[in-house]
Length: 433
Ligand code: GDP
Figure (tube, helix red, strand yellow):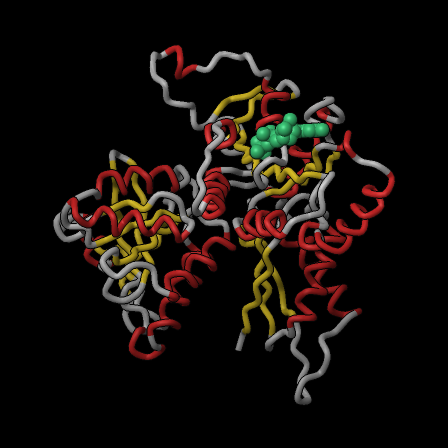
């Protein structure tokens, strides 16, 4: 069964929420107090779909202190859960600890549903809305105590949880692949969208007699149907004077949350802006497949082209691995290269390295390049396994702490060996006593 982890700071109401979700009659599936941590797993179901729910509430809070206990919850969620509910006390708001957990979870690429708890009445809705700034998308206002809002929360959880077999082996998710077309204002997002989609195609919602813009659109490219996320946000020219950047970045974060691949559009005719790199960082930290598209290529002269090369080397190191296409939404230049680049990135994102191959590679690598001696001892990588895909995640088990430089070296060699074009990869290290 798919596993849902409920994480959050002490006293935000995790256990109350778990009780609310499972109802009173559910039996405890696994209860192992005092082993290494209190792990309490229950079986639950919602609208006929069954799943396991893990209450991380009591984990060594007293022994470890709050931050460490919350970090342990996040670690569990990242390792073992298919989706996560982060419970935040809406009456308190987001704390530094909450933000730290969000960072960890985002990097892992696990789906997260945000529960804004203790919203006991309509007056608490504003408190819940303030939690948008955690960048996890829509906060679901709930009162675990009274049951208010838990139905909507569970619906969202069901969307986040995979269907029964928890591990999909690099398999495509059902339905069209989801693309977030992102970039700072005026780089040409809506021009590109119009170019690829055709500007006069039928907008379904208008036919239905509503004036609402469609949020996501199905667009056929290269013979394949893709889902473009939040096209309303791209097409609508929103003129906000205050906080425009802030809302744009919330929107980008929300689109990334729903997408599998991010096509990051950059204006090639202008010097790379800080906002460009910020958007790239967001996509990488969200764990999405990434394609870099340089637009307005028609405006480039020799000089700009020269500086662009330098910028790519200097400022795009964090996405060195991303396929790049140089396009012009105006002239249509290289539009046909977009789809192959997206497919390459998605393939990298879903790569699974068989354990045998991984360990053969690690064995040779470690023999040829041992970790530097530290205090007379030599930490060694004992074995490794790929913990997941989308994006690829690896866990290395080592006999001692591995230095950051060595970890980066291993990561680099993993890329050289197995490719991973267009995808971030995550490597975590476990020390075995
Ligand atoms: P958005 O804010 O990212 O959606 O950007 P828009 O699509 O509205 O484009 C901003 C401006 O750049 C408009 O004036 C477009 O006509 C122009 N533009 C977009 N793509 C290109 C391109 O490939 N070449 C040139 N020369 N101009 C472009």
